Image (tube, rainbow, N blue to C red; front, side, top):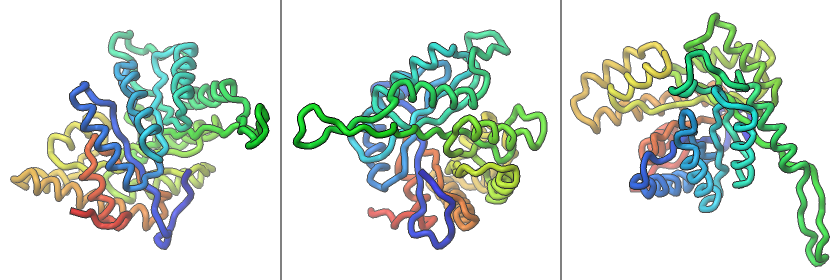
Length: 314
């Protein structure tokens, strides 16, 4: 889906992350966002999966909408912690039955109603990668294409393997015991069958570029896609830091705090994300993955200001 890029690349691949609507009322707005993002030509649109399966059904609804109403590849998030093999396999089959052929395999956080330390049958995202590949092999061992003009005849071909993305952590996972653990974990995911990685967010290009260099030295060959989030308010920045354990980006934090207007803060966040996009692409990133927060205008403006897409039409 991705290959290593260069500043002279004719077109930089990009993609977006969405989450399922919290309520039926927000569903129409999300569908409009999907259509607007799809018009820009992304490599894929990913849809998050609710913790403990809380929005699993709505995730599948969004993925189906993408598949049936756009030409963009839908990518489903799956989490494994706190799940059984049987339940996880059933969920994977449900997505495959809906025509989903791209996944992001995540460990995830334990459900709130389970005891602390409860992991379930699948203890790592590498094990989930293996399960996705195995379930798909059983689900579709080969593909048949009808032969025109010959009723009942079909051409048999090897099945298309699913794309399985995994997470990478340039600044280290909050639960990492040492600096090299995140590269070692990514190596295990690659060995399990992952086809590319998407990073946790970061705030400086050097964080991503240094991580990629360490990963390549360690033998990781899959594309590592930088995850970039436009931060447009102090509240959003604080929430992101709380969830990820990232260090406070003081320059961005101060700029957002001293700017008195909502629009001014939005422009600061867009400028920061656009600069970060340009820097990682110039450094060889195979594309960019933007967290859209179910809104299209901000991320599309980031890509336009970074020179990845044409300027937005008003």
